[in-house]
Image 1: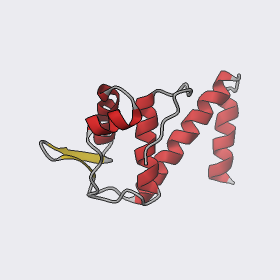
Image 2: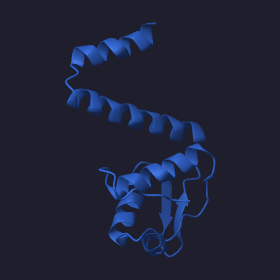
Image 3: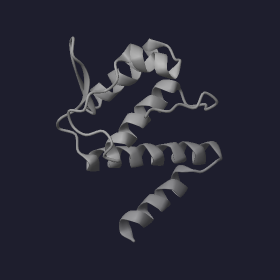
Image 4: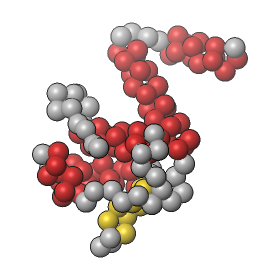
Amino acid sequence: MFTIDLTSRKPIYEQLYNNVVRLISAGVLKPDDKLPPVRSLATELSVNPNTVSKAYKLLEADGYICSAVGKGSFVSPDISVQNAEKQLALEQVSARIKDAVSLGATKEELLKILDGHFNG
């Protein structure tokens, strides 16, 4: 269910975070679904448990999951597919903006594109 790319420049915890958000937005993970325990997932993916824990903590801070001591981590009962899709789209836009800036795009050029989407 979860996949990581060890050759990617993106940190593994971010890849896990994005995996969960994608699975929620696709409806694969639904509110109150239990996520794999940190140690089990770390073993399955051959990564450090701290990496999985970091991803889970960020997901919890952003409201995607909630944790219950002794019971595990669950998809937040308040999460909606629409919110997850919106967050994923915003993350993708942010990544593309970083790419454009690294290639020399100016703020004015980017704002012109944004204005075109809101005004046109």
